[in-house]
Length: 183
Image (cartoon, rainbow, N blue to C red; front, top):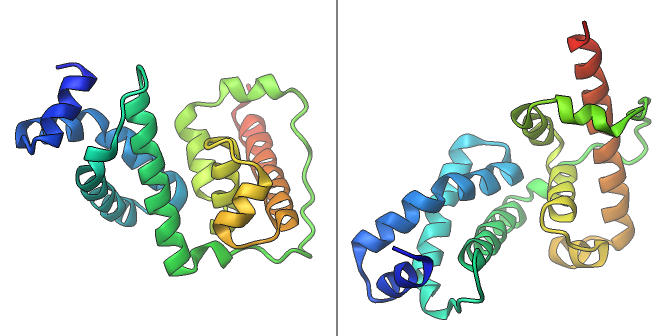
């Protein structure tokens, strides 16, 4: 069943199509939820909530070409995760801005190619919630600092600062991983 037929069947309330949609996209959407929360149980709850939103609003989806369904759903799941973070105040759980991080920058960015994606995603999940949220919005959702500030209710400069600190923490983790696994 192609994307258009699958969406049409979901719009008509076909539970088999809804199950198929879930099976096709659950893992990818779970990844989005986990990227923002770094908690498997919370991510599972958000996955459930996100699919409810998808099925409730599927009638508003308009096909715009290949992968438009995935992009539309990704936005719903990102917003679901951000809504959770706003309500739980988790985004305020950041390392103090005056903390001084001593870190070597990555000498050769190609070094990250040697690190498995799962390890990199784990490093991202270990970031403090605020840093992780800004990093994800900037890196994966390609939002500007102005957009991030508006969504999270923070200053644009705070978004920049949190992104910079997230990158420093990640650089340290990557450097440590490379040193540990050399040889």
